[in-house]
Length: 553
Image (cartoon, rainbow, N blue to C red; front, side, top):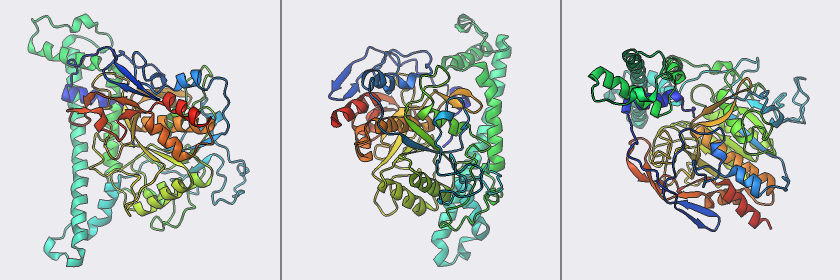
């Protein structure tokens, strides 16, 4: 599940020219009920998010945050955590030497570093800080990989691509129909990529046209009063003002315009790698991919060649608190176990299953899964791993996805629902909310689902760690999931007598209820926030910890 880039917003603004000027911000009406809040009207919106907006109280005057800092100050002050909690970050890799993370990285004390011996006998040699399931024994690593739909198409095309339906044996018709469905889905994705490439070209031309017309080199330089309408504009000047005004109203800067070049490169890479059925980097890992029983492959390079996503996710959970540098993590008394599993492309089921098993067997109590895809051909293997973790009392937290889709109706994996009709108990699916407190409260990219998504959490412009001792704001349900993982780990560290299932139930019962209409992701129609998840609310650490405190007395 990839981070949603700022370029995504620029494209959305320019293509759809969405304006929310009709939205009224009015005074709060908050109803309190036991350890829960209900927000019945929107608050005055802040112009920009702070670096810790996601940690502010739910009743903050500018943001609908999680109340993490309030919980530390009012409920946990003077208390000491009672157990250290291991949180597994199954992701793209993490910069374990980052100044704001290095002291929080899990260390396998049963391994002697660098001796090339599996000292603890767990099947993984020198797994000091976790494991890398998409690397080879020689130290080489998978960077880019294909999408799952591409792999499925490539697997079946030689058998079915050129065949007429009359040539297909009756016992192969179901498989042939499945191929046709996959082919259509694959071609749709290819076409969409080409369309986005064309849109990028058009957008860059439109912005340059506007800058030339208005005589500016940077959208940062133009005064706001220069964009006001006089009524005397010619058509070119009017269009130019509309373009620049829309960009600035949505917080765009000149750097965002420059980032369109990077997004353009990402789309070109997608054509070359992710959607290329002839590209297959699995030889780097060197395993027999079809042998699902083979769990012991990979290497111990948990950073890998691309660690930006995993580093950002890890920092949301547990960047060092109150050290006067960088980001502010949520959970203090934790260790971050790094399990590199997600390439630049879709993760593979075998690796996901083995990552979950590795994390569980090595002591993780929370597993953060900020990734996802629409197909899961070895789902039974992932199901077995999730069931194993669930039975061991591990909480699995999954981002709901960034497709603006109702995942009650569209497949999204990993999932709590097993193929046999049962489901995992200790599993949370998380949608993303914005820092804005108007009808755009729900992130425009976030998946949703009354029956499938459990809760929403802050996932837009969340500030966290980035490789090389850097820090950035990123957006995605990839950011919302670790907010929930961090809060869960925080509760576990202070209230170890509560079971994982109790922690999960408390999190769901103490959400901030949003009794308001918002724009639905995807089609921007009005919908009640309560219809977008099973709880109809946003995660609330303050309420959850207050309830945990009461139950633990």
